[in-house]
Length: 284
Ligand SMILES: [Zn+2]
Image (cartoon, rainbow, N blue to C red; front, side, top):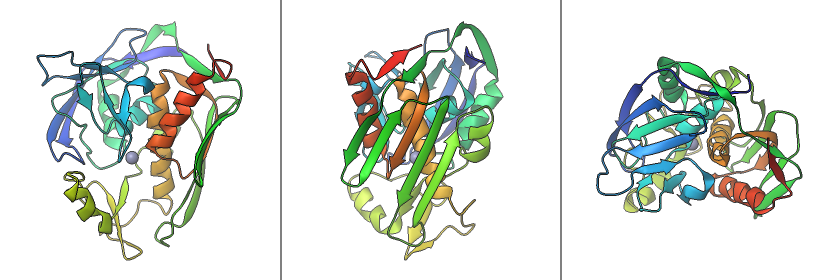
């Protein structure tokens, strides 16, 4: 239960990046104890191509969590894959990518869960690294906040509040336990507003976005022909992003996460605030 876990064999999946619009193949491979999740850019030859999935490697958090290493080699939109790793309890894996951005696939973590299931899980001898929260740490930005407090296991409470009645106020409570992520969270897709698409395109972003990988809202309505998978798919996706972002701590969190209107930037600030105060956590 508390042993480190990797995958049993190699597996691959391909698709376009939601922002770059560029195709990429992701291949996951088994990794030794204590490796963590390490991205490797297979298309980079002249520089160090490894980027460990750690909070200190996060460079930008606009429209996704993006990381780079000291050589300036980057990997974009890592959060849905990392959420799948966290949700399945995977500690160690090499994630090789032949492009700048992870494939968006259907906009959720489900294809990554399927990828990792295909690869199979393999227990290792070493015990898991656990980041135990010892005192509350909070970050705020206007009405938004995110907080980690001491608690048993890893539990989360996330609230979102959007002006459009297509979303409104939604809240979810979640406890990380075997099977729960795949059942309750992994399938929730990313979402966006049609009126922002043009603005994104002008910035060279969102080039791979479509209704095949994004829940699109226009005129206070969900535009996707098949609608939502659940009325609260939005807050479930926000929770998915939180799980992916917090995985960058470098170990399983033991504590309570609470947030209103969280985003990648706030989650990153929260982890950095925890690590900035040595009395707020302990590695177990
Ligand atoms: Zn997301």
